[in-house]
Length: 264
Ligand code: NAD
Image 1 (spheres, rainbow, N blue to C red):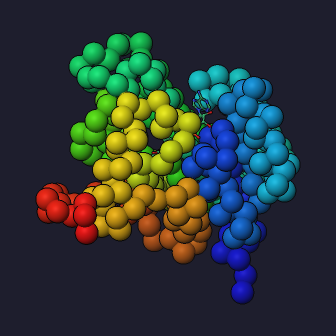
Image 2 (cartoon, rainbow, N blue to C red; image 1 turned 90 degrees about the vertical axis):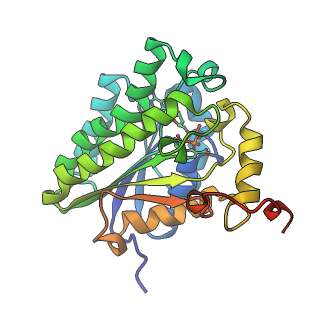
Image 3 (cartoon, protein in one colour; image 1 turned 30 degrees about the vertical axis):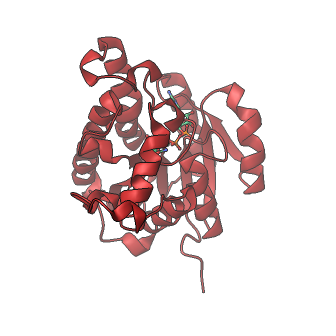
């Protein structure tokens, strides 16, 4: 049978290393027939990202910092010039000062509030604005979020506030772009040990807590996020937009676990 993403061209943003969620998604996309372009954040990351890209046969690699307008312009100019059209974009990018991902939200500085919102929320809207004119045959736009948007999670702080805004922006973008046949969704991934996650205080404890308390009694992998992403990016999800899809071993469904559940 024809691979589910055969004939589709997509951009994956946010690959830092082989632990990145973007890597799990990129592998699933290529494995299901897509042709990819990748962005990475600045030259120092290239030596790590290039062998990964090459192992997937990806030749279009674009240096792109989402806060740097000329680099965003250049990346989307190149996509337009080389491909002319785009079928999907994955945005797997977030940033906050790690000093403020411990302790209390109440101490967030105005500078870090602005930067966290700019990189972790607005950049997705900016990417959508640039991508939708290239999606002449419809398309799928996907971002990554976390349960800290919905409920208080330890130390997630300003990132939780930014993810809440990101999830709201998914709904507004879905409504704006729906008439063009473009779908906009988010995956709310359970905690995964990545570079970005290493900045969050007590992350090891959070992983253990999820493992003990999620219905599946384990954490999720980047490959599992990749498979769910593949579905949302494909025509299998043609009726799905404005959605926050949890890939978290079911953790978000649990209000309270029985006191002895950890030992079951
Ligand atoms: P990661 O560190 O591998 O990826 C984060 C990426 O963001 C990096 O590639 C980094 O270069 C990029 N980035 C940061 N600032 C940027 C900028 N100004 N311009 C361009 N790129 C920039 O970590 P990850 O966990 O794979 O993160 C990917 C996404 O998944 C993030 O949105 C994160 O919040 C989300 N997420 C992660 C978890 C988790 O537990 N790891 C859970 C849910 C959601």
